[in-house]
Length: 427
Ligand code: 2M8
Picture 1 (cartoon, helix red, strand yellow):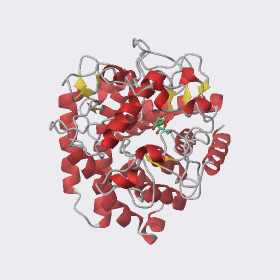
Picture 2: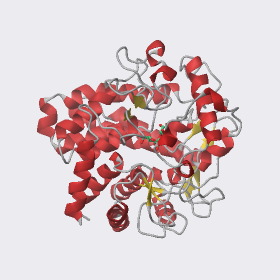
Picture 3: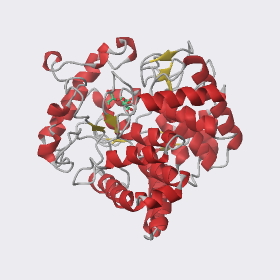
């Protein structure tokens, strides 16, 4: 079983490689995505450390002057109409994006320093030869600096996302309430391309898309300047903040390797951990919730994002989070990834994208967090369940936790990458 998974995962990652980076899936996602590339590099390092380094270098090659790492880097060789919203919509070059590449103006969760560290550790000699860490370290510092400086919108020590796409969990039920205040762009003003590749019962609705387009075009029309705009959607997401804290811990290790001072990075981890527990943790629910910056209220929707803080080193509430993660709420009926939304949630939909299906990257993050906290028994159980799902459904984008079948894209890169990493790790 493991041997077959490794072979097939390798096939997927090789066939989605485009010469300098990897597409999440052919057809539906024909460009480079930010957090996908981080997960992909983590898997690729088992096949070729050089390719894994290039995956991350190409992404950071498209970093903006202000330090942001764009959520999509468009492939110039791919038809610009293949994906919506495409390069013309974002007009990145006019707003501080890199001069020779087209990108989006949004960001995605910062899991990159973790990926850089793992790729480095896979073969330090090869990395040193190419100056991999020396080149990436200042870029990672600028990336984290962009988030803490420009996205610290409420001043409470946490960073905010300003669009559901920035969460990576686009149509999470947690965004329904803040999104309901956004006037959608007219249905006739844009043309979705995603529905040509996946069923509309598995994707966000047209109303969601209208609101996504409105928010993105307003941000663009303000030159993507964070301070210059009262964001209609601004949320402190536990997944984004947790990944920033955990990446900052990895950045401390990277700093030590390149002869920089790790102490400020360690202080930053401590600061973020404190603010996360203080502002986003709900002890009654045993999990974290996002906070709406515009109302100041917690959004009490139980999603897997509220469990991802397990990745934060020395988190004081690990026990409760583990109980929640392995309780009934997030358990699929068939062995597989933890569900993206609680089974008893009022908006649970087992086939629709981030509103119930299990995803491989979030389960990888929880596994990583469990191992970080020495919870090897639970980590091993999750690993076995996820590998069993891969064996059953292949490298699908997500899994219906009720029927147990695969949904969304086939041959999905981060599924292959996570499977490869699980398959290559004992326990
Ligand atoms: C999905 O998001 C994109 C927009 O960024 C889309 O729906 O077109 C999400 O699952 C996101 O987390 C992921 O990075 C992206 C590419 O796999 O697809």
